[in-house]
Length: 601
Ligand SMILES: Nc1ncnc2c1ncn2[C@@H]1O[C@H](COP(=O)(O)OP(=O)(O)OP(=O)(O)O)[C@@H](O)[C@H]1O
Ligand SMILES: [Mg+2]
Image (cartoon, rainbow, N blue to C red; front, side, top):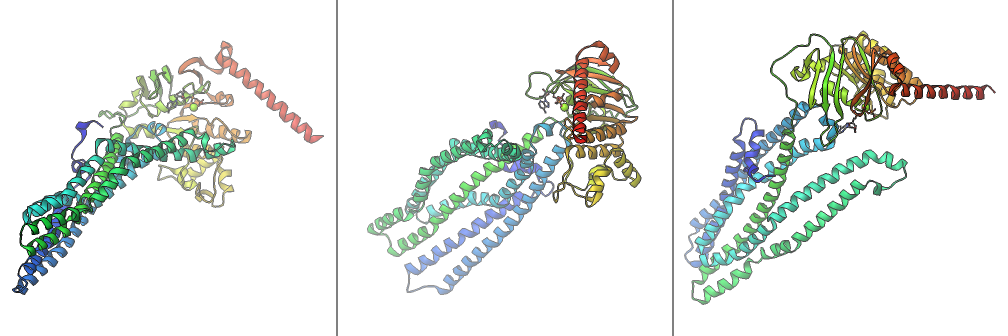
């Protein structure tokens, strides 16, 4: 992160605080006050000890008891004030946590749809949820210590030097040594390490998700974890990080822990020296007691401030990641609200490259689809067919050229209007873990039962539903209820039919398990595209037959264009595909005949 971006940590939380921005500073003030109240008893105990030791014969009991009560009151007061400091820091923390999640979620909702193709949902969830969680615990628990770890050392040092500067200096020796060690541990190198440590932890956790997703493949190929090189490498990297990190801290940490316990080592010689020099014995003893009491407090404070710095870093990184997310360029929307007058779809010289790829996925694609027409895209895998559908739905914006709906550039259309005009059925449809009914009605509230039934019939989904124990109310993904790929696509088609959008983008699933399913899906797609402007990506030439026109897409360009008849006459790529298709058809028929013949014999 560039240095100039480093703001004071509290300032970075304020945007997420909502109203009541006072809570954070209030918590700081209260915890500072509590730190003062906590030190007062030590001073009073010192007074009392001094009194008792210096004139044991003429002790002023009432004065001593007054001091004692005062010490007690101040200690209790310190605890109570600290309670309120924690209360306000927790309130603030919850607000910031919610604020961060809101900002994150808002941003996710406004992301171009293509974002989700390129960023793992696990990582995004981690940034928003875990980031907010980390920040919460930092603010709630560590923040109050921040004031304490500023206020107390100042007070303590003043006090230590006031009571008896010579013993004060002696008791400061371990603290200074400890402080130097701590600075060393928190040095730039240590900090860099910490960031690398958390990065490698994150990498390992995201790789593990990928690994678990890939387990079926790994298992069916009889491989071990070593085949998942990336996961394996991330574990090794993490191990090495931890090892190096531990080694870096081993010596300074041991030194630190030891040196911080050595106050007596310096105080006793100093006391002996002072007494030997002829100082007042009771007073030296009283001071000595005071210093022995107060020096462990310093240790605790330094420890706290060390943890504070460490956690500040973690919280800062959480905010950095969220900022990274919010700074991700979203799609721009123009203010001029245009409404769609007709539902044609047009691409004009569209050029588009995916992020990080030097070769354009689409290279000057132009075609026009009039309202109600059906166009079919065919061509080799990786040619750019899905990308065309994505750009039509504004998953991404074209780098050059225009995508127009009803003659209006999609950039000039309100998001809602565009989304309402388009129904999508994609290659890898995802159903939600919800009832079939919710899956079909998704995004539509007022749908009549007959409409729903019609969609179920038209999408050929009736038999899927009747076969399930709870029919439409069966929850997908629970109790082992799963649908086959083909069945899922039929449900997705039902959803699209219910949506009843004037433009339909269909990306046919590449693999239908059986011809029966394939046949049903084609029937369903036909119903869905009836009377609609349809862009259909066909992987099987049977699907192409209803199209008004066919585009053959090859390496991001339109290689051939025309009706089926024209393309066959042309004798080019499409003709080749057609011949292949006829061959496979003949082969299938032969196989079927043989099978039937075998059965009859
Ligand atoms: N999200 C993505 N990020 C980067 N590159 C991508 C992404 N999606 C597709 N590509 C690349 O863009 C090119 C076109 O891909 P596209 O998915 O549009 O092909 P397709 O014609 O739909 O193929 P298929 O018939 O296999 O579905 C390919 O080279 C592919 O590797
Ligand atoms: Mg595709």
